[in-house]
Every structure is written in C-alpha cells, then in structure tokens.
Image (cartoon, rainbow, N blue to C red; front, side, top):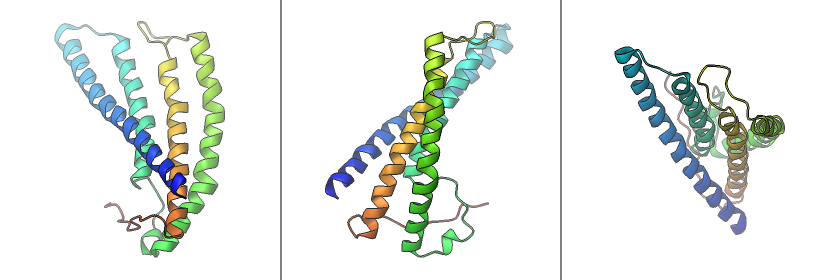
Amino acid sequence: MPILLRFTRFVDAITDLFAGFAQVAVVASCFISAGNAAIRYSFSISSNAWLEIQWYLFAACVMLGAAQVLRLNEHVRVDVFYGRLSGKAKVLVDLFGLVFFLVPVMLVMLAYAVPMFIQFYVSGEVSGNAGGLVRWPAVLMLPLGFSLVLLQGVSEIIKRVAWLFHRYDMDTHYERPLQ
C-alpha cells in the first residue's frame, strides 16, 4: 500500500503541474481575446489565427484542468442523496463511479482520441479559415486530458481503497454547491 500511495502523490503532482498550465492558458486566452478585440475595433485589423488560438487555449484549459477538478472533488455529481450519506457510503459511491464509469469512459475516449490525434498530426491538417492554424495541437489536448483524468481516477481509487483500510486520511465531507 505505501508504494501505491506514493504513486498517488506522484499523480497528484502531475495533475497540479498540468492544472498550472490550464491556469496560464485561461489567462493567456483572456489577454489574447482582449488584445484581439482592441486591435480589431481600433485599427480594423484581425486574423482568424487569433480567434483559433483562443479556442486552442480554451481546449487546454478544460482538458488539462479536468483532472485537477476530480482531484479536488469539485466535479459534477448527482448529489440529491450523496450529501446525506456517511463517510464510508460516500467513499463506496465514489469507488463505484470511478471504477464502473470514469475509468471505462476514459479508456473509450482514449481509444477514439489517440488515433484522431495521430491522423491530424500526420496529415498536418490546417484550419479551413483564412490565416487558420494547424489543428493537431488542439486535438492533442484530447488524449492528453483524457489520460490525465484516467491517471487521476486511478489515484482516487487507490486513495479511497486505502481510506477504507484505514491507511489514508481523507476528508469525506461534501458540501453541496450553492444553486
């Protein structure tokens, strides 16, 4: 179990690293968007590349930040009953969801995303828009993001099993989001 818990710390560190990239991507996207709008309205100059880079950065923000959302237990869940469950019941529900939904779905998504990325990379496909960008960097975010969520999912499974065996201290308190 200590080796598996070390693995979870390693995965958490990787998730933190890529979450930092996601934070930079969202800030960069905001600056590019504001700069593009200012130049477009001030000087009537623009390029589709500026719009596309914003989309690429948004893809990076979502796909690279998703694993961090899972790690921090801030992901979307149907919490009609979850908030009323005991700590052990919450952990068991989490385990069920991680093992039977998250991991299989991420594996399927990777099975589709990896060949798609390879196809885009090999073909060097470029956006059909004038001044558009090569598409593979945006498509790379799919297998990268799904891999990160899969790794974090495995890490969360290990943590919950360790918690059940009293080998890991985890906060099972869940606060329902304000609506």
